[in-house]
Image (cartoon, rainbow over all chains, first blue to last red; front, side, top):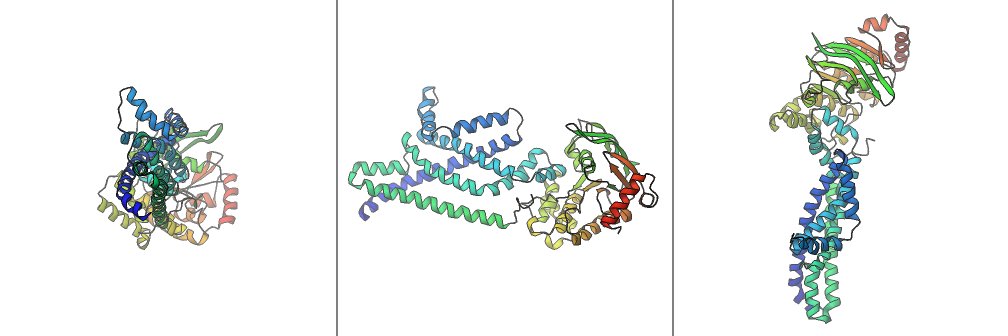
Length: 223
Length: 247
């Protein structure tokens, strides 16, 4: 078993590297897009909020593998060729944004109304008020929900396997296909790697959550 | 010269007409206190003045500019109208200092260093130099409200609107806030909605008694307290004085 581990580890770590890059890039994209969706849904003019509701419903209603296939195989049929890695990032980001928009929207709704009123009373435009007052508070409030989304995206990068991204799962498959006896061991190692990764991310983010709560955040107390 | 002129302001929410034609004016540096029972439209009037809730009818003029003109840049005007809230509304994620400086930095586009220096001066003025680095959650109600006043003062407004600034405070904290308000009276015009009759009597140049969306009577404190013209004014002042004390 140790031998299998030693032989396969370099290859698995290479896969892990792709997994990490995939996670980070799709989370950055997904978070930015999610914030945009949440802000427009709350503050946007008709009909934008309704378009966003439709977007959220649709993206949350389709399995990720279908989104991946649509982006990778589907789009190429109409001449839009994405490589597997691009399709995976885009698919993960678009779906995650739909979920994150809900997290951010709930956070914005829990910010006391007086924050916006005070900002506008100082002479800030609506956009500045959102940028300087609402979004910074929204981000602090969103850490718990967002950590959850982080781990979901991280785990779901494994589905990118299906469109040929050479990430952790696919590297594992290369190993156990060429050496079928190692199948169970390799899969257990992969499971362990995911688990350790997710576990440490959760720890790190809950530290962040506590740290920012320490700096005197009192939303919820005022109401 | 009149600095603030409110002319026949009407405001309704749905079928409910809250303001039914309010007219009054204020001079530079003057302190006016609005009194009246709750639900009478006092807070609505303040929100009409800074256009948070634009009036349905009537005009509001500040320093010779018509604020109700739809073409006016309301964000520029609001810099001249400070607002102090009953619930403080300090920005929860910012320290006391940043609460005061953010308007200078982001609205007046003042250099960061200068803005913070000015903010520090304002905090000193309200007696909170030592609390500059604390977050709102770490401050008492009275301290929060004084930061709120410093935040308004920092913008160098022509007038500050106070919406029941002491109503959410424990009785022993009210004094500090009123002292700060007294100390800035006549430096900047103040329009104060309050039940603090002592403050009204000692600091106000003009008292405005509102009821049912109209001004029942207004005049200098001496006249209003000793010799009100309307029976309703007399009745209200008698009742409120028993409740809140005269000084």
